[in-house]
Amino acid sequence: MNNIVTIKMKEDLDLDEFDPGEVHRVLVDLTYNSLGVAWRVPLIIVKGIKEGPVLGVNAALHGDELNGISTIFKLIENIDPQKLSGTLVLIPISNVPGYLAKMRHFSDNVDLNRIMPGKTNGSTSNLYAYSFTSKIISKFDYLLDLHTASHGRVNSLYIRADLENEDTRTLAYLQNPQIIVKKFDEEGTLRGWANDQGIPCITIEIGNPSAFQHSLIDETLEGIINTMVHYEMIKGEVKDMVTAATVCDRSYWIYSKKGGIVDVLPSLADKVKKGELIAHVYDVFGQIQEEVFADKNGVVIGKNINPSCDAGSRILHLGVNLIEPEPEDIPGHDEFQEG
Image 1 (cartoon, rainbow, N blue to C red):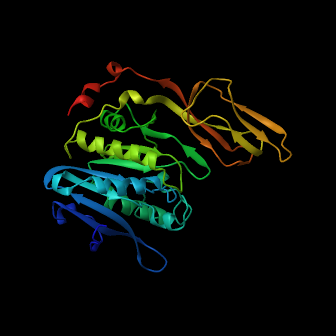
Image 2: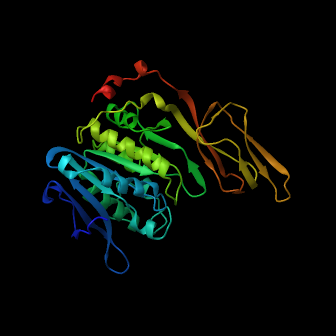
Image 3: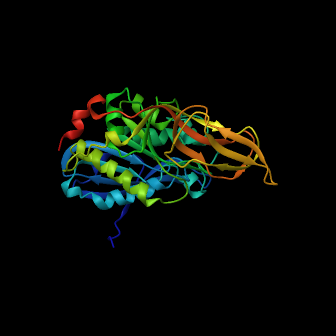
C-alpha cells in the first residue's frame, strides 16, 4: 500500500513549483459553487528528474466516463519519477460536478466538450471550462483526452484524430486502437481547442460508460506508455501498432424510424455490408415494427445497448470508407520503428 502524501491546494498550476523526481498530488481551484467554495480539480503531477515534454492525460470530462480514471491510476503505478524525463500531468476527473452527480454533463446540464475553451463571462459551465483550459490544459505540450461511450451505448477502443496533421497522426498511431476515425477538430471540443493552441491532442474512446473495463484500460495504458517512449520520456522500444487499426474516413450514427424494443445485432468492431440487417425494433407484443439495415459498407464503432427505443434513437455508430493500409503506405511509418 502506498504512503498517503499531502494534498496541496493551488489557485493556479505552475509546474516549476514542483520538485523533480517526485509525485505530487494537487487540487486546483476553478470556479465557485453555490456554497461559495471552489470546485477543485484533482491533479497528479509526476515530475521527472530530467528535462522533457509535458504530457497531459485527462479523464471524465464527461462525468460518467470512468475507464480513463483507472487508466490513469495504473499509469501512476508504472512510472518512476526518478527515471522520467519531462512531466506527466494526470487529471482523473475533469468534470467534478458531473462526476459527483454521476452524469455526463456539467451541473447546468451543458456538455463541457461542446463549449471549450469557455468564457470569462457567461454561464457556470463556461466559467468552469475557461478556468480548466487556461489554468491547466494550456500548460501542456501534448494531450491525450480519454473518453467512453455515453449512457446506453457501448464503444470499441477507437481514436478520433486529424490524420492530416503530422503530430496528431503520430499520437493516434502510437496508441493501440481497434479503429481510427479521421476526425477533423470540431469547434467547442477540448481536442479542437488544444490543437488550435499548438498542443497536439487526440481523443481516445475507451469502451463503455459508468464502469471499469480492464482489458480496454490495459490496452489504453499500453498506448500511453508507447507515447512516452516515443517522446523519450521513458526508456523502451516503440511498438509498431499502426497496422492493427482500421482507419475510417468518417463515421455517423444510423437511427431508428420506429419506437419500441430494439435489438442491435452486430458486435463491436464487426464489418458490415451495405444492406445487411443490423437491428430489429419490436412492439411490446413481440411483433417486428422495423428492420434497420446498414446503408453502407463499414465497421461497427459503437452501438446502442438500451432496449427501450424511441423513434429517432441512435442505433449503430458506423465507420465508413475503410482504409486498412500496409506499413509502407503510412506517412512517417519509419519513425515507429525506433527504439
